[in-house]
Structure formats: structure tokens, C-alpha cells
Length: 457
Image: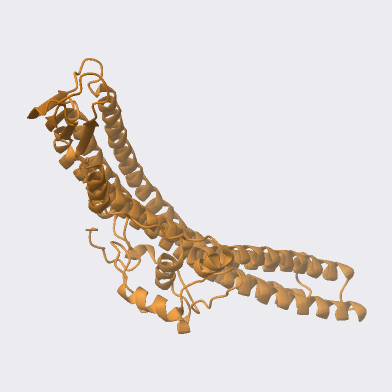
């Protein structure tokens, strides 16, 4: 009988098998290797995401912001690890739907001493099962399904943020390239100017003051060039990290990349309307809240005392055979699941308040970012108007200097002011790009073209 029981146990049990997954150098190198360009192009054209749109991936004209966003989602190693949470929630959903196993018991009693004449072996067979597990199984499965949906939305939200971070670094890098080009052009012009002034000083046409002023401005611009080069390298490395590319890889950028214009943006009222239906993190919180509602319902259903129903078949040593059933009920004197119910209620309230807080913060962020962009746009227009005036002033000072009607300090001060305004203009545009990307994150949709995205499904 025992052999039969063992056979049935091993036969009915579906055993998983172990497969090793070594964390060796070869496995790590394979995981760190970025996808092939053909793979990226295929996935970029077929990507399915609540917010990201498929793109035609082509690097021949430089990496565009949209291509950078898709590449980051495909190749970023942090996102690969984050997506593993989906597998975990699916496993939890499977576990939530599994009912407890029935319990089978078998006993054998052998007469060993005493008045054993005429006795036989006694045995007992029993089968029991916890029926209360059926009461809260539906609530547990609903909680697991909602939690899986919440994790899917949260992963999509993290992908959206990584994609936007890649766009941000690309805008910064492109505008830093333009700043560097302006600063290097001025540095080259000042180097030529210093050489000319030195020759003029040797011939007695100018004084040492002229040379000192020219060298001082050259040194100042040289430091600007070094500072911009440092910022550019930091942004290049940050972009590579967001894209999941090795640090040494260098990407070509579009020839002339401008931040989106404020005029293409919807109004504050339009962006704020139905914000909670677009922000993936808010949708994830909402699904998490629904999951918590089901957990609370499952905890309340678990107040029902545990009930085990069993059936028994036995024979005693006198060969009297009996068949019957048994019911085992927990007496809810001390434990009525009140602790778990209190925990689930407090967790539900916490999730509710967190949802309200994040929705409030999202609306404030949208208003603040729009105000910042409006201010930056005004500063950009003012600076753009000032640059032609300063250029004209520099040319006027230069002619006056040649005619002996202006001092050299005034000329170099004007020239320094011009280069400062040119670099400041590109800095303002870089800040505007930063604010625009932040606004898209806060709004939960693309806003660059002025076309409103559809609500995530």
C-alpha cells in the first residue's frame, strides 16, 4: 500500500527541472553587447508602447531625438532588468490561482503482543481538503491580475522616462556642439588677432596694453572652450549610457537641431485635462490601488474559520471496517485575521493618498514648466535681438580703434560681450529643450509637433 501511495505521489506531481544559468564572463559579455543595427531597426519599426511611436531607424542623417528614444528603450540594460518584474508578477498570478492540495493519509497498525489470536492488521485511509480556500481565491487572483497590470504600466512609465532622458541628452549634446563651434571660431579668430597685435607691437604701431588686452580675452575664451568640451564629454557619456552603448562609441548627430517651439504646445488647460488618463505612473498607481482593494477583500473573506472536510475508511484489528467523514473547524477565539485586515486597510489608504499627491504634483509641474518655457522663450527672443546690435557695435569699435577714436579695452569688452551673448543664446535653447522634455514627461505624452497623443490603453 505504501508503495502504491509513493507511486501515485510521484506520478501526479509535475516536477520542474533545474537548468543552471552561470554568471560567468562569457554570459556577461553577451548580455552587455548592444543589439545589432538590423535588430534595432526591425524592433524600432514594430515597437508596441502606450506612448512611444514606431520610427524608421536610419543613422545616415544622424541620430534624431525620436531614434534616440527608441534606441534607449531597446538597448538600455537597466530596462532589461526592469522588465524582469513582468515575469515575477506573472508567476505571482499563477501562484494566486493555485488551490491547496488535498491531504491523503494512510496508517497501518500491526498486532504485536497481547491477545492477538484472531486479529488482523488494522489500517486507515483518509482524504481531506481545506474548502475555505475557495472563498478568497477569486479575490486573490483579481489582486494578482491588477498587480500585474500595474507592473506593466510602471515598466512602460520607466521606459518612457529613459526614452525622454535619451532625447534630453541628445538635445544637450547637439546644442553644446554648436556652443563649442562658436567658441572655437572665436578662439581661432583671437589667436590670429594676438599674432597680428604682436607683429604690430614689434613694429611700434601698438602698445603693450593692446597685446595684454588681446591675450586676456584669448585666455578667457580658451577657458570657455575647455569648459564646454568638458560638458560635452559628460553629455556624450550620459547619452551612451541611456542608449546602452559602450562609452567609446561615438554617434553622428543631426546637422542643425533646434528645441521645439513654445507656439506648438497646447495650453495649460488642454494639457491638464484628463492628465490622470495619460500618465502611466498614475494609471499604474490606480491599478495598484484596485489590487489592494482585492487584497483587503481577500483578507476579510479569510475571517471565515478554516474548515477541513475529510473522508475516512478504516479497519480495526477485529476486521471491523468503517467508512465515515470528519469536519475540522478552527475556533476564531483569538485570531480572526484582524491584524491582516488592519494592514490591508492602512495600505489601501496609503495608496489612495499617494495617488492624490502625485496627481496634484503632476498638475503643478505642468503649470510650472509651461511658465518656465514662456520665460525662456522671451529671453531667447531678447538675446536674438541683442546679438546683431552687439555685432554692429564690435565692428564700429574696430573701425574706431583703427582710426584712433576708441580705446582697445572698450573694443575687447564689446567683443567679449558678443561671444558671451552668442553662447548664452545656445544655453537658453538648451534649457528650453530641458524644460520641453520635462513637460512631456509631466504631461505623459509627446508635445513636440503640437499633435495630442491618444490615451494609453
